[in-house]
Length: 163
Image (cartoon, rainbow, N blue to C red; front, side, top):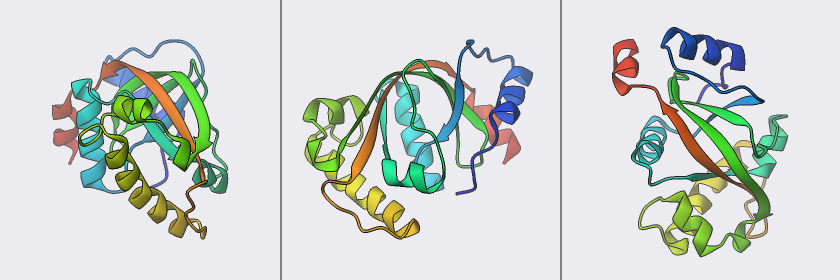
C-alpha cells in the first residue's frame, strides 16, 4: 500500500465532506496490507464489531512512525488513502505477540473472535510485515494493541465515486 497521506490533507478532505474532527492530537492510520483486507477490516469497524487494532512495533519503528497514544484522534484511511473513519484511541498496550489475551482478541472482532483465529491471522500479517522490514517473525515480537471508539464514518458512496 502507498505511504499514508499527511494529517492536514485528510483533515481537509473530512472538512469538505462536513465530517467533524474533535480537537486534540491527530494521527493518520490504515488497516490491512491489501485492498481486500483493508475493506473487510473497515467493514468490521463500521458494524461496531471491531473496536481494536494491532500493529507490529518493529514496523512502526522501521518507518519512523509514532506509537498511538490514548486520547489521540485517529483518521483512518482506506486502501486508496481516502478518509474512511474517525476514531479516538482509548487504550494502548505493547505486549509480546504470544501474550495477547483472548479478551483482547474478542475486542478486535475478527473472524470468530477467538484467540486462535487472532493468532493465525495476525501471525500471517506480521510475517508479511517482518519480510517487508527484513526481520524474522518471533512469538515474542512486540505488538501494539490499541483499543478505540468510533466517532464518525465517512459515507461509503463517497469512496465509490472516486474510484
